[in-house]
Image 1 (tube, rainbow, N blue to C red):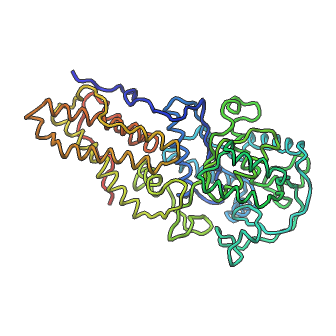
Image 2: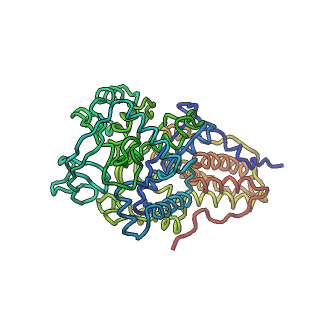
Image 3: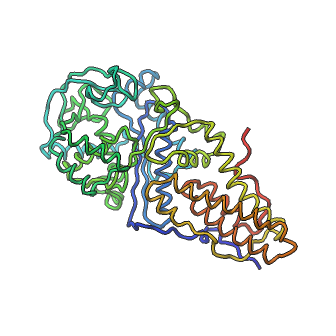
Length: 494
């Protein structure tokens, strides 16, 4: 009688870890809701989801947070242009982000909105701690402001034409009274903790960028705006609302129920903030300094990834070259999009996106690679073993280094390594020709099939964080009481 794996996936096995943790907390930036989600925001969120799934599968308590940033002058303007109140506009836009993540198979533990009462209460508490620290003072800001970034800029931040290099717009000239934070007081502590590795910034070249910026000398930063009404008021000065970035950054803490929530006690500090390279200064300089002033522990790591480009330009809502991930999912499926985004470009580097490249990988790697392997094996079992699996054996191939590659954010290399095994398995079928031995040498046939089944389980295990739906289909098919000729994992795309 054949032995089949249990339906709960126990046969899939456990992950081997290079570093064992007692908990894992991963975040994405919370996304600005002046427009719908795009492929760049999907990229960040999929990466965080992969890490969260990886650690969850290991049995390590895991918390994965994403959400939406809903205050500020840009939201005021976008709502007005849409003919809606800021409340209605942000609610509708937050729902679009939540829908996009669902369609991509992204499973956060929480989705925070900065307009929620729980967040606003926590931010007020944070502001009170900052005020009590003695690190805030009133002053006048006179200079440049990029609405696209919701950030104050210097002349050195602009391109040769005097425009923001990311948004291709000229910043506004401002003169306004603000509350300032004494960021300059934290230069030495920031430099020291980054250099020592106590506060990790990755990749290394981003760490070097941050250190170089700190060593130029830090200036104090405004933490409030007097002219923005759509925001959280300073508890000691209701003429001012908190600067949108200070509001947004605290989501990482507020979502955990700061200061008394069980999740805050269990999961803070964050193990990694995953961010785009354009917001690394906020996360690696301003954010830890604010936490230090409020006597809140720093996050352990910030990892900054690169940008997708189209024709050499950053994908940006303001530039009008946005690609809707929902459209890609509708055509190719969520797992194919997840695979392509993390396989095509090494995480941390820039790379060019095209639908043609996605279509090519879908056909070569997914349909002709993994899909072909799954179909060939299931068909051989259905036709020659009456749909019954042979007895369980150990996988003939081990590739535990995939676990280490995931922990090191080397998703591109991890997927490449998995596909080496898929190619090996397809070649193994070609060389052993099990369709010939099925009648002539049943013992050899059973041995070949048992090896392939064990290897396919191992492949499904390694793929589960990246392609959860596909991994589940493979497990379900090989766990059935009787294996039948399957439907294609990756149907032909017209």
